[in-house]
Length: 145
Image 1 (tube, rainbow, N blue to C red):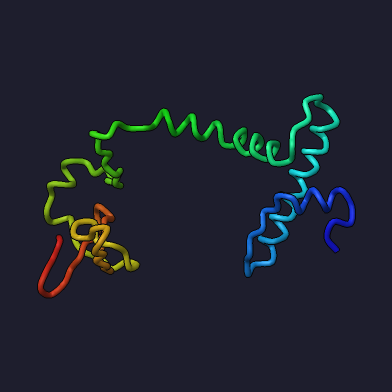
Image 2: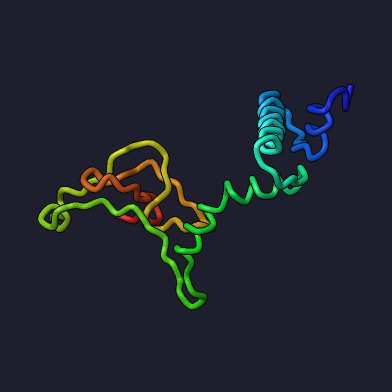
């Protein structure tokens, strides 16, 4: 029963038609479409310059993401700059850090080794440093302690 009334007609003009196996996704997109159609009806009643539904949707989406675009432009880097990833580095006082005897391996949950894991090759380990709480690989042929 499409195009039963004006609301249904406007709803189906530029529908966010997303197929999903999750039922609540479909309901969410239906309510999002309904909110846009209702906003369009209110806009037409309150403002004199009449615009199409397509132009209204375009200006609405641009208005919603305008702040994000401005924030991202401020964070933009030049082509020559390389941005290093921030890595978690726990703070340990120097007297504890240089005391070799206090750093002992202990078992913990399985995590990526902080020393030998890369983004392409993940090395998983059950061992962490008892002082630093950093996961480090401990094996028969190789050790990161």
